Image 1 (cartoon, rainbow, N blue to C red):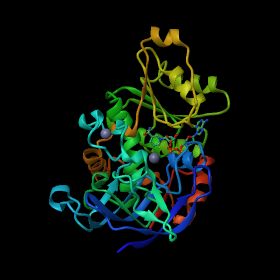
Image 2: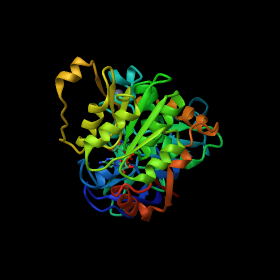
Image 3: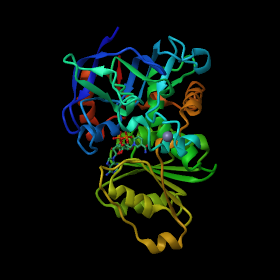
Image 4: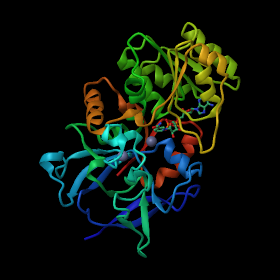
Length: 373
Ligand SMILES: NC(=O)c1ccc[n+]([C@@H]2O[C@H](COP(=O)([O-])OP(=O)(O)OC[C@H]3O[C@@H](n4cnc5c(N)ncnc54)[C@H](O)[C@@H]3O)[C@@H](O)[C@H]2O)c1
Ligand SMILES: [Zn+2]
Ligand SMILES: [Zn+2]
C-alpha cells in the first residue's frame, strides 16, 4: 500500500520550495523505506533552490538525512546488511552504480553513473507521486526533506546505537565532506598547518577533522565573527575576519602560519576565495577545493610561482567517503567526544521552515538548520 507523506518540493531550480502531500510507493527489490528523523539544510540545496545548478523537477529536496528503517523490499537481507527494521541509518548522496571503474575501485564519490545524478531509482523510475499521478523526483535519489522515503539499500548506512539522529544526518553530508577532505582526500600530517576559508557546516567539519589529525595551526577565515568564535571552540588556533580587501586577508593568513598554511581548504565556492586559497599556500602547499560554484564559473592563478613552488590544487568530492566504513566511524568519534558534530546544529525547524533556513544561509547566519520530523 502506498503511504501519504509531506515533503519539501521544488518545482524546478530557482523556484520557491513548497510543502506538499505526496504518495510514496512500497519499496521494490533492493530498496528500503526509511521514516526520516532529521534532515540538514546544506548550501548544495541552496545552489539548486537559487537556480545556480540546473536540476530536473519537481523534486523532493534534501541530501543530508537520517531516519529509521521501516520496511524492506525483496532481497534486502537484514543479517547481511545490518538494515533491520527500527535501525537508525544515515543516507549517502552518491548511490553507487556498482559497475563503473570508480565504483569497482572503491571510489564511489567519483562514480559518473550514479542514479543520484538522475534523481531517480536505479531502474529509472520514481517512488513519489503527486495526487494527480505526476512523478516527483528525489534529490540525489535520497530526497531527505520528506517524512519518509524509499531509497536503494546501498544508500543506507546502519549507525551505532546511541547516535543522535541529527548527528547521523549531518554525517551524511557536511561532516563526511569536511572531515574527509582533510583526513582522506589530503590526509593532514600531524604538526602541519591548515587554513579554512568559509565556516559553514563543511568548513567547520574540516576544522574538526584537522584538530583530530593533530594540525599545529588551524587558521579560520569568515566574514561573520560569530563563525570565528564557534570555530575556536572546535580547535581553531587563529581567526581572520574577512573584509572586502583580499590582500589584507591573505597577509593575515600568511602571518598566522609563518608564510602560509601547508593546506588551505576553500569551503564556500566563490572565485575570489578560491583564488585566495591558491595564493596563500607556500611552496609545496595544497589548495584543497571543497566549495562548489555555480556552473560555468572560472577562477585563475599566476602560473609561474605555482609551478616553480611545486604547489597543488586538489578537488575533493564528498570527502572521498566510503560511507559504509566512514559514517559509523565518524559516529563513533562523536560518541567518544572527539567529533562534536552537535555543535553545528544552530536551528531546529519543521518542513515549513526550509525557506527561512535558506534565507539565513544566504546571509551567512547560523551553521546547520536541521528539519526534525
Ligand atoms: N565538495 C563536496 O563534496 C561538497 C559537499 C557539500 C557541500 N559542498 C559545497 O561546500 C560549500 C559550503 O557549504 P556549506 O553548507 O558549509 O555552506 P554555508 O553557506 O553554510 O557556509 C558558507 C560560509 O562561508 C562564509 N562566507 C560567504 N562568503 C564569504 C566571503 N566572501 N568571505 C569569507 N567568508 C564567506 C559564510 O559566512 C558561511 O559561514 C557550498 O558551495 C556547497 O555546495 C561541497
Ligand atoms: Zn551537502
Ligand atoms: Zn559507479
